[in-house]
Length: 221
Image (tube, rainbow, N blue to C red; front, side, top):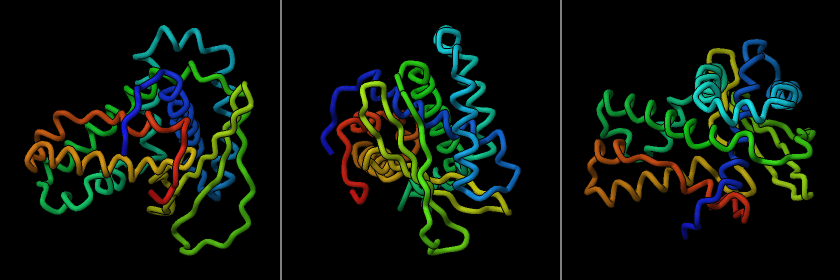
């Protein structure tokens, strides 16, 4: 994958999508169906951002803390961390696995919270999905983010059911599979660091996916 210059706008788009997960956390315990869960909370997202952009722009630490606390209830970070580590997960120690999950979570929140209030959107809409699930414990929810200039960014959330609750395990933004992109980044970092997992964890910086979002791509990449 060819890297492109990082821009605040691209970071902001992904930040907006991450914040949808933050708002989903508000009713995650209600055990709603995945589509209804996302749909109900899109309205909550827009309501919370309304008139608060300037405040959060000058209180980034508060925003990061809020997102961090809330993501506990909606994102399965242990599942995501194992997926990103890929084939290296089995050789990692329990301490390394836990440390990567913590590092992945922290860097993701820091990166995207910075752009949360700068992406100018006009509408966020959840699309109807009448297709049957392939597995009872897995689901996907399709969404579109419409910017103020009319650009439409398709989004697909992948969820699985754990302990009776739905949790997000991956997001595809404008054809860019973020989980797969991060896994490729981890794999490349392992090659660059002579398979030293500790060095990769210490230097982890998930910027690659955000650089590609506006141009888009093939979600099967």
